[in-house]
Length: 423
Image (tube, rainbow, N blue to C red; front, side, top):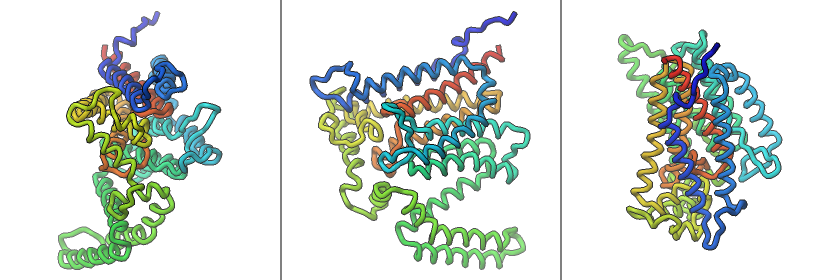
C-alpha cells in the first residue's frame, strides 16, 4: 500500500511567506491609493475588495496546483503552449480595443489577459524543449528553435499592441543564457538597442554614415592582419547590410507602427526629443509623490498627492509611487529588499534542483518577475519609458495576480517533489 505523504512539510515556506507578505502589501497599497475619507472599507465596489476576490481565486488556483502530480506539468507543456498560441490569435481577432491594445478577453464583468498566462506556457515549453534529447544550445538548430518558442508569443502580443507585456518575454533569453546560449546573443541585443536609440537621436543618415565608417575601418584592419584573423569578408558585409536595413527601415517600422502615439511620446521625452509636459505627466507626478515621502514617508493613508489623485494609473502602473509617498525611502527600500529576497530565493531553489526541467522553469519564473519589477519601478522613478506593466503581486489586476500565483505554485510543487525523492 502506498504511504501517504504530507506535502505541506516539503514546501518551501520561506518563498510562501514572501508571497503572502507581498499579497498583503498589495492589498493595503491598492486600498491606500484609492482611499477617500468616510469610505466604507468593505464596500464591494472598491478596487481593493475586487482585488481581494482575485487573491482568493489565486490562492485556490495555487492549492489546485499542489494537488496535481509533478509529471503533469512536463506532460502538459506542449499542449498548453499550443493552446495559448491559438488563444493569443483569437484575442487579436476578437478582443475590443482597450487603451489602444487588443489584449483583453471580456466575459461580462470579468476581463482576462491571455498574454499573462502565455508567460507560464512559454516557461514550461522552454523547460520541456531544453530537456529533450535533441536540444543542444551549442548547435544552431537548437538555438533557432529555442528563440522561436520565445519569439512566437512575443510577436503575437506585439500584434495586440501590448508592448509592455511583449517586453517581458525578452527575460526568457536570460534562461537560455543560463543554459549555455552563446554570449554573442546579448551583445547583438545591445547592438540592436544602440542602433535603435542612435537612429532616434541622430537620424538614419548620420547613423548610416557612422556604420559605413566603422565598416571601412574594419576592412582596412582585416586586410592588414589577414593571416592571423579568421574573420570572413562575407560576415562583415552581412552585418553591415543588416545594420543598414534596420537603421533605414526597421527603426521607422518599429517606432511608428508597433508603438502607440503615447508610447512614442514617452520615449521621445526620455531621450530629450520632446519637452512637452503632457507627454511625461504621469512620470513627473509619480516622481513628485515618491520624493515628497522623504526618508520615512507621510504615514499610511496620509499621502496628500495620493489622496488628491494627482498620479494617474496609481493603482496599476504607478503603484510604487504610493509606497514611496506614504513610507518614504526607508519603506521603499524595505519593499525592494523584500521583492529581491523572493527573487533570490527562487534562484536558490533553481540551482539546488537535480531536475533540469525544474531548474529551467524556475529561471523562467525568476526572469518574468525580474523584468516586471525592473520596468515598473524604473518607469515610476523616471529611468525607463512608460510602457504599462504591473508590479507583481502589488498592482491592481486579476490576470497578472493569478498568473504570477500559478507560476510560483508550479515551482513550489516541483521543488517539493525534489525534497520527496531525497527523503
